[in-house]
Amino acid sequence: MHSRYAVFGQPIAHSLSPRIHTLFAAQFGIALDYRAIEAGREDFVQVLDAFARNGGRGANVTLPLKEDAAALCAECSERARRCGSVNTLLRVGDMWHGDSTDGAGLLRDLREHHDFDPRDQRILLLGAGGAARAAAFAFIDAGAAELVIANRTFERADTLAAAIDAPSRVAARAWTELSIGDGFDLVVNATAAGHAGAAFDLPCDRLASRTFCYDLSYGKAASPFLDWARATGASHVSDGLGMLVEQAAESFAIWHGRRPDTAPVHAELRAQLVAASKK
Ligand code: ATR
Image 1 (cartoon, protein in one colour):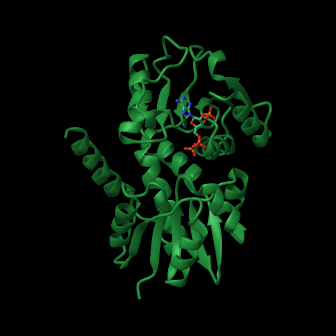
Image 2 (cartoon, rainbow, N blue to C red):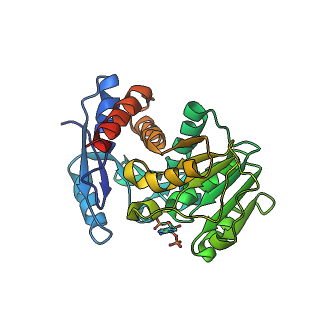
Image 3 (cartoon, rainbow, N blue to C red):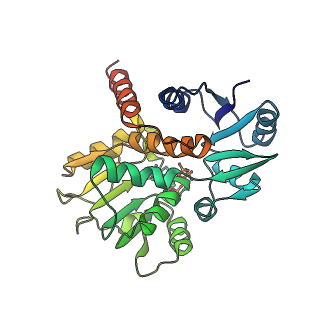
């Protein structure tokens, strides 16, 4: 029997993870059974139990299950515990071990593909949900000089800033009190605003042209923020497709002990996204 792997979430039908992991496995001649399995918060524990009984060795977990996954693990990595979120499950004996590869995937994409090292940089993070949380810890661990967290609901930004506990480098701001014009090196959109498709709006007429703008989502969901960034003067913008592929590579390495080459996989998915956007 092949070892079984899967991604759990809701909705999950359009997940790119099965394709990504199948391409990674092919690089090593590994015969992989990796599926997308629909599960909501009510039935996740039962569906995951059934998966384990049927030979499930590892799983990715996506919205809205990352916090539930952290709660059901017998053990979590330090980085997963701090984020309160698990995106990678590994079966050890009859228990699940949890890890969070989102932050590492983001850093790797920024450093390897965008020549951006957060060390000593001034970073503005938009959003304070699960995705923002992983990014915020990653930036501070990577040595950012200043991290401003802005969120529509200020209290969530404040709670996240307090959890990071580095007051000399981290501050929370209300969305409406933002002043972006004074020059961030990186602005990251970690809000879910783009999923609704509405135009993006921030109190900023002009970005410094050196400001790099990055959206953690990809495809249509990234367009409102990236369109806003271009219109406001950013010369370098990117969606989060690279982060998706890099966090998957981190998960793959946890399960199989080998690190895949992400470049050809990223290129294939990018070509698919471009083709889909022209339809
Ligand atoms: P995720 O795990 O994807 O981060 P989440 O935890 O539900 O999902 O967080 C969604 C984030 O997007 C939050 O920061 C949310 O802001 P609130 O805390 O104020 O809800 C933000 N968000 C969602 N829709 C938004 C919108 N239309 N404009 C601005 N921020 C939005």
